[in-house]
Length: 618
Ligand code: ADP
Ligand code: MG
Image (cartoon, rainbow, N blue to C red):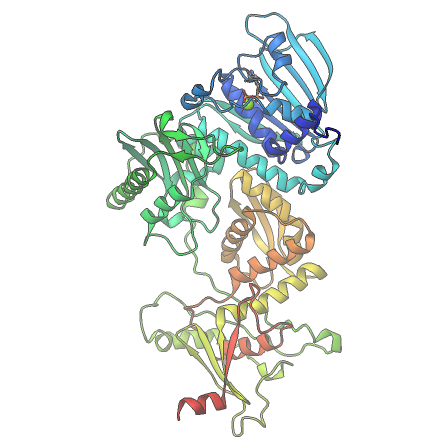
């Protein structure tokens, strides 16, 4: 039989290798920016268009390349950073594989302009799909500028696989932030479609964090410092009370390289144990310095995983360092010598008192009502949360009963008019409505024909609100209440980018925005059933839920938005509900299209039949 093995042509091999290095535009950003760092740059500018699909350009003021090196840099395994395998164990650079430029050039249109300090003229090289198009002598500033256009132009399958521009942009921002946090001594700028997203002057770590994550971050940070023979730890952790629902702001750097380590992450979480609520995550920006011979960063192609020689010791040291900082911080506020008055929270924001959320929910919505062409006549039932101020008191309901009563006088509830009414009068002989009972401020217990129903109040209310919001968003007919004074909220740039992306869907729920700027948004209208004090709670929840990934299809985006809103607004476990509210909740739940499940597919209620009860009494 004839020989069948062939060597792949270089450009095919490069394309395949490219798949490993370049998964998405963010991978290109990572490689180019890291090269700029390795080149000793003190200033790096990143320019991106259309989530990196159209253009990614990195301009640095580093050492540049000679004519020969410029051409060589696009060859596979061409690197100036290691000479032998031994060098791998003493790495001080980001790159070392010599694959990035070759891979990127194999799947995009690349132009590089580069000049060394000592040279008068520089080099311009253009490569498309791995093929050299031109190499010329050119005038160009000292340093290197590489632009990557039309990524994956020759691999349509990969190009089609890319997510929306906003999603790709988020990944790029993630990479950008990681490098920027690892190198506060380097000036960074980032632009997207002509808009400046970040301008980060050379600074210490704390202001760098604050410049990236917004002014309000400053007050949240607690320093961590620990020096041992094995490791030197420095950086900041977020105060426990600012723990977020999202996992967004967790950063480990080992020898200035961003890494992911579930194991060390756990060390931090365990130090925070008992200080933060469940399902929330502390932010941290921690820098570990270890002897490079004791780690292996070579085990993962994208190089965010790392292997330590002695992980257990590291774990213990890290945990105790974080605990120590938390302890110190609890005894006395840590003095902040690096304080920069420019970073202080704006006055109006700081002095905003904490408002207790009150919920007034329009549970009037009944998905079947309009189809029947009925006119809505009943007054709207309202789920009113009890004041939580006297929470510890067993008799809180009785003590505050009077004032609550007043609040309720205008809010007549005619739940029996709802189509989902579970309590037909004939079934409950002698009673006009079946009585409900709230157990442990968590369950609503009531009887039905066949026995009893136990409803989880939080999940049930989520279901009701979820259907309502989903309908509003898809039908686009939510009512908005105009605010007398616009509500100004501060966010980080990354967060406002996200809010911009969700703006349209949010408008369909009743939100109205007059401004969405770099670090602040101005809200002029909010959904009918939302109170002003709840807006920031909702948006925080929203940002947490969408941080990971913005769903691509508008349907799943609407779905996630409705889930988030319902999660944020539903009466929570632990909230005392008035009789009227309990009844309205029960009725509204059973008027839902899918009453049995919460939006997250958990059961909303269970039933116990009369027979089951009888059996228990045998
Ligand atoms: P690696 O970074 O793993 O060495 P790359 O493919 O990323 O491989 O880069 C190849 C080589 O090109 C680098 O080793 C470096 O010598 C040179 N190079 C790449 N980018 C720059 C830059 N921005 N400035 C100076 N030299 C660069
Ligand atoms: Mg590199």
